Image 1 (tube, rainbow, N blue to C red):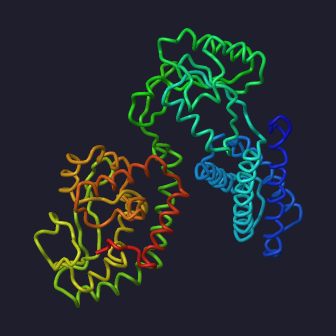
Image 2: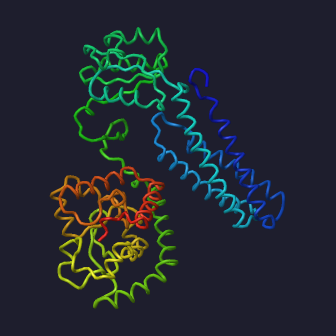
Length: 461
């Protein structure tokens, strides 16, 4: 890529997408030749599919690769584009009256999705390799020196895949061992340096009292084709990350990014929950429930299901369903199960160890009280107690509770002997709701199943 530019990157990548689409049509055609009514329908359907994908790529900007790569976020955008593509193609084929069987259509779509995702991952890795080799880079000039600028320098220097090359640092602070190799002069020398050197980006981190100088550099950057970015002064004293929204031109700080506040993400997660829970209830619970019910009844007196009030999204109370694993006792709503708890029946111990006692919660998921993945719901007593003991504990209630979750696969499940145990669980749950995407849910589900079958659920008792 000459001069570190990538203006010709998009066209060949999109052309390969179209080639992948044609391969997917070829695969579906060879699998279901008899399902195509006419060659004209085949050609028209491919043309519609190709143009629709081009429009989606342009609209969703899935090949706009950010400097700081977050592979999971990028791939989630790709998955969203494919879901939208599936819905649009289906609608357009119906609109044009093109008779293609569901078998052909689904085969084509699954082939395209798999190949396109694999291709996109390959593109991302290739871009990272190119940047590490010094291609597709941007020259950066830094203005000001404080702890945030120091962290920025360390991040850029330790991450060559970002593709930033630090050209110079200008600050009125005396250079030290850390900055001496980057230091090029005082603040008043910034403009003259830019005029005699190629600079793509300028990053400024200065106190508010220098607002006139900051504005001067903003205007200078605009007039000299330099993109200016500012690290705000208040990031020096705020103890957590933040995001900026705007009401007209008024900036408003948000202290938490919540992907599940997006309507499209809510629909994606709820659709997945409905489909997943429906198939589990239909194909697993339909035969599992009668078998487990017999063993529970034979092992102890009492009901098959244990129903307990738990704290749900935004603190809403709901009835959580589980298979009963304990003898009938008056402390079930007050005291957590512990290792070697004499209230647990022999059958109950097996159900807990294998997590089979959780399967009735798929009914909660189907009803909408819970999600397949999310923070585990707690007893009302514990919600009240830990909300007083653990800072930000209630933040986890911004999301629907789940059958499994990020905290569980990190080992934070079972009895909480110390407040610190619950603090770590809450931190993991908050990280989940700030970083949610559908691929993360898939990862958590796969790791949960793996932990169960590999015997790593040490705290399942």
